[in-house]
Image (cartoon, rainbow, N blue to C red; front, side):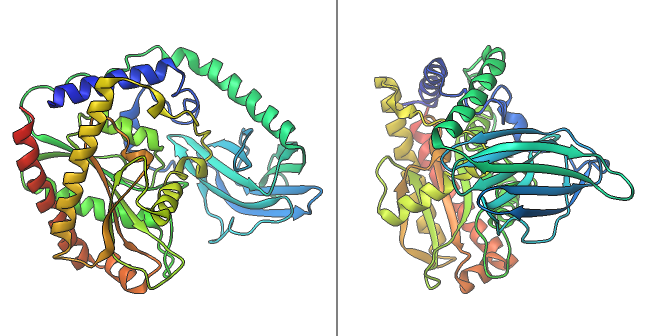
Length: 424
C-alpha cells in the first residue's frame, strides 16, 4: 500500500470519527481546528498574575481551597468524572508556590495539580476523593497589603448530582464548539519530493509532569532534553525534516499530538518517554508499538498510565472507541501501518542494544492512544526506569543521551531504507 493510500484512508477515518461526534469533548480545552498550533507555547508573560501560596482547611463535610494571587483574576469552574475532578481555569498565571504543593490533600480534596494548559490559559485540577459539589467560589480582591484570594468551597454530593453537573457543562461546551467543527478535516496530500518528515513527541509537559525519579527530576524534562539531542542528530544527516509536538514545558493533549503529526505529513512518529515501576531493580530501555491486545498486564498498566495524560490535565476524555468505525480500506491501512511500526521497533531494539541496557522483553505492545494514527508508522521509546538509580543516572548523562540518540538515528535510517523502497 502506498503512502497516498495510507493518508487517504486516515483522512476518511477522521472524517467518519468526526461525523460520529468523537472529537467533540476536547474542543473546549485544545481546539482541534489548528492542531499544529499546539506544538509550542509562547514565553511566559512577565505581567501575568503570580500565585504564591495554596492551602486547604476543613474536613470531610466541607473543605475550602484557598490560593493567594498577586492580582484579581476571573475564573471558570466545572467538574469532570472518573476520576472525580474540579477544574479551575484561569488566565495565564505564573506559579511560584512551594515545591510539593499539591501532593497532599485535606478533607474532601486528595491532591491538586497546576500549570499552563494552552497559550494565555492556566489550570488547576483538584482531585476529589468522591463526588463533590462546588458550594461557593469567589475571588477576593487584594486589599490592605493582603494578596488577592481565590476561594473554592466543596461539599459532598451524590454521584448522580455530580454527573448531572458535569453533563450540563459538557453540553454547553459542545454547543459553543459546534461552529468550530465546520472545518476541513482531511489533511492535504504531501507535496511530491522533499525530505522525509519525522515528528518527535517529548512525552508529558506543562501541567502533566509524568513520573519522577529519586533525584526529583520529572519525566517531562528528561523526554524534552533527549528529544532535542535526537532531533539535532536527525537534522544533521540532511535527510529529514524534524518537527516537535512541544519544544518547551507546555501541555499538548494526546489527540493533538497525533493531529500535529498528520498535519505535518509525518512519515514516522516517535514518542519519547521514561518509565517507572514499584520494584526499583527493574531497569532498561523498552520499545512499544500499538496493539489492541497488550503483551502482558505490566504493559497494559503502563499504557493505562500513559493514556491518563489528558485526564491529569483536566480534559474530558471521549470514551468513544474510534476502532468501532468499520471500513475495509481503513482496516487494511491500520494493519499495514502497525506492521511498519513493528519493523521500526525491531530496528530500534537492534540498534539500541549496542549502546544501552535493554529491558528483558525489549519490544512490547499495548493500546497507546498517542500511537493510534492510522496512516503513520509510530513507536514509543521508554528510555529507562527513573525508579532505578542506575537507569536514572544514565538518563541524566549527556554522554549516554548522545550515544543512545545516535543509535536511534541509525534505526531510523535502516527503517527508511526498507520503507521507502516499498512505498513508490
